Image (cartoon, rainbow, N blue to C red; front, side, top):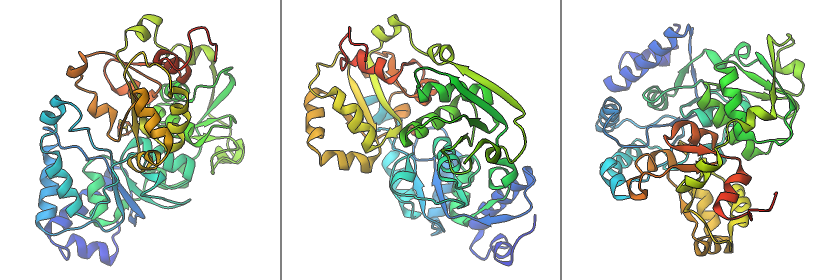
Length: 396
Ligand code: F3S
């Protein structure tokens, strides 16, 4: 590993012993993956926003950093809150949450509390090198923005934030950003981006899939990528003629032919859907994993307003987007309809559902379906139908 004079000085303790240890973590992480140097990052994003009984080593590192007056060297954002005031059991599970937040804020972290950091608080541009954790944000940054981040973990993320460096390997290098698997979408009649993300994650695992053209919206790209990064460990994807490093298939594959081609059929997407009984029995409907943007809340909320909800409906929104929604008449209309609007992470908040009688959750989120025990998947229209937004006989 070649270090610059600045990096060597930091390793030798010029910034204090705790900072030297953080740099050592980054160096060893890089060595494990064959990196030859550390490069500066434009920003960091941390996953460690929850204070819970595990991750004790992480909290100890944060404590020591704060005690020694260390601050982040680059703009650094933070994943969502866990919903510690959501239900009594959450207050117990996350009882030290406020203390943890004060520690992170003492480090200079931006208290945006969103996994969709790239919409408001942390705005990378094409080619920026990032030291992010949070798989849903990383896959969006790599694929849709054209910035460059590896799939970093908790611990590594904070070491990158305080040192300002990341090892150069993997998705930071052109050769690892090229497509490896062509995904032919011509067999799909009704696009469901989140189900597709789930299917592709399973097919691609850790490869870079290239999807044939489909005019996905920004929200669909967000949600589809999050699903891919959950059911697989996909860190980057391309969509022909849509994402910035894939103006055409030849560019996406770096001029080489795809090593493999798979065709996704409509039946592959449909197979993910919950059964009628599961939909009927689900006790909670949850939207927003990753957290909803304003556009998503307006689109889905407009279909719910004024309807008689058949089940509790929960929106999980980017905090800034929720503030913007609160300024619209739709906000009060949604509350009057009975929609609960939250800004925490549904995976954390709904993990213990004692207050709901441990009921199953119905969601159109491929990521929440994958990670949350008892979360059933259905397409957006099916979830809206179950909520009461679409009449039973309406084929919309
Ligand atoms: Fe975000 Fe929590 Fe889902 S961090 S992607 S809302 S699991």
